[in-house]
Image 1 (cartoon, rainbow, N blue to C red):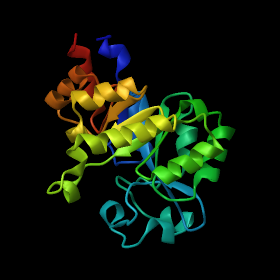
Image 2: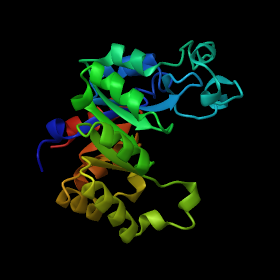
Image 3: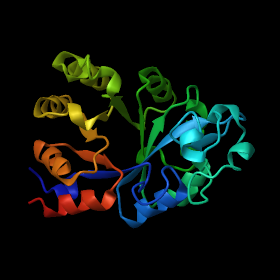
Image 4: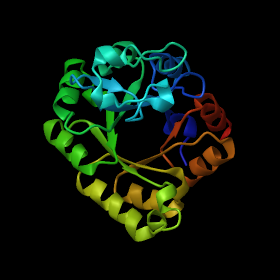
Length: 249
């Protein structure tokens, strides 16, 4: 195995969100200071068509305000506190803060935002430094048609809804997701860490796909996944991930 210090990508999940409010400029600045390779963040469209960065379609958890991101204008969204006085960032805000300092891993949540997304990243000369990911394969394909030079990543889920019907733990289902990504010239798959095993990693590598897992903060789990051969790790705790990587020989 090559030196993990050089091989493993560290992707700050919603920025350095163990230290700062998730998906805020403060969290992204911390990720830069901690020297992560990428920040991962979630993209929505406001009512007036501005691309904004937040995870939840509904605002209650993060702001205490009952309402949906896509039902409010940017001006209305900017009145809300997203934690520690932080305001919702626009994609342009994130680009301004991070350009030349850290890579971008954009999770597309809203539909039909590809043209604006491509426009902003092209204008900023960030296409080569950006990973575009989504659970929505159709949206990824739409964006790929607009700009094939992004690095694309299929997110593979595992959540409560499938615990009692664990289709994502079945090899044929995981293989199908990997094959689809490879067939469409994607660069990565992003599986939930609980479904990752050596078979998934080895087959992905055979298909010329790198494996970035989400979202892991526990050091023994991080170490185990690195030893299995993952290529990158999304984590809320960038410092913990770096400490593990630096101890692996």
